[in-house]
Image (cartoon, rainbow, N blue to C red; front, side, top):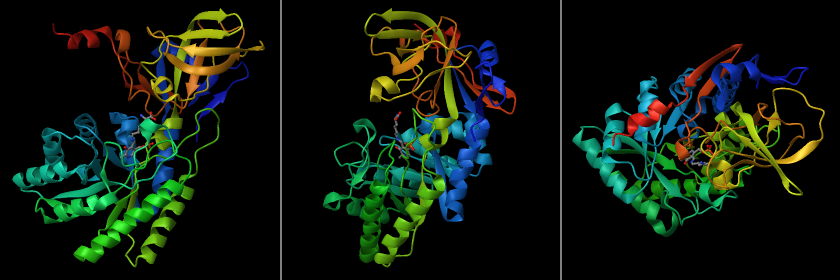
Length: 427
Ligand code: LLP
């Protein structure tokens, strides 16, 4: 569905507009999101799961009002994890009952706003939060739909910082030692809560569905224990997000239809074995929807060849617009997109303009040896967790996000200005 192509003279076009025109109009660095591609991926997830399941886009991957509107129009729901994300969702018209509210340390203020707004569910993450949400809901005269997030004890094969189902970490309530069963007991006793299901998110950038299989097995085991102990069958389970994408090749992630089929089969099989009515499934993909749909466009600045090592190519952004390389050793590719070149490839490292040597955007890349200041280079697959984790380190201004669709480009998040920075500085 991506609308990126290369013309005969080597200039890349997206949504029918060439990158030189985009750079001229919007400046660099900038993120360009392919709206048709985003909508197609969102739709593919929704249709893959059909009427039997719900897809909640994980807003943490990248959220803006335009994104919320696209999701709404494509029939998806939204997972938010802070007051800021909630405010963005509501202000763009996402119906509150299609919002799930996450987080391991939601403030009372955030909980109150979520309950008052009428969010479809709050995902409870601790024993204290069970009581906190129950009391707040009751004081507002509400009965809040909630799920309990459990850790199922799976080691997901991904970077330690983005794995979330092993027990020794801050999210969720362990199934182990009967802790999750105890959380259910407490939630069922509280009038302010309507416990609708169990939630499990095993981690991020995962390719293998075996982790989901173990998670589903254990969550269904808990549903069965709940039925045996309390005589009720909880109607929902959420298997979280985490499906990986290709960063350095054109391979597409697994087809959502395949994933939907695999997850539904696993849950149905486990439920059959436990003689339970199959619960309604929900999933929370973030990266798999938005990741491949955007790229970052940079202008090449200083080029520094280091004899016998490599050539350092500095761009006009860096770790402030993509922290993932420094934080997770993430791999990206890069391409010259403003012209063709027949020059030999040179081993390059694409670095930013920040004051630290870890400020690397692409660690190892081949770029043409005649690369020159002023050339435009693009780093694909920066749609997820790049703008959303962007910072103002060194008081560098955060880049804009531009949506490109069918020959039209429009800013959906504008470039930060020095005025924006100074407005916060009230000393
Ligand atoms: N649901 C929950 C409860 C989550 O915690 C997350 C991600 C998702 C869904 C969406 O996961 P996704 O489908 O996007 O993998 N900053 C890291 C990723 C952190 C993910 C945090 N939670 C990165 O840049 O790789």
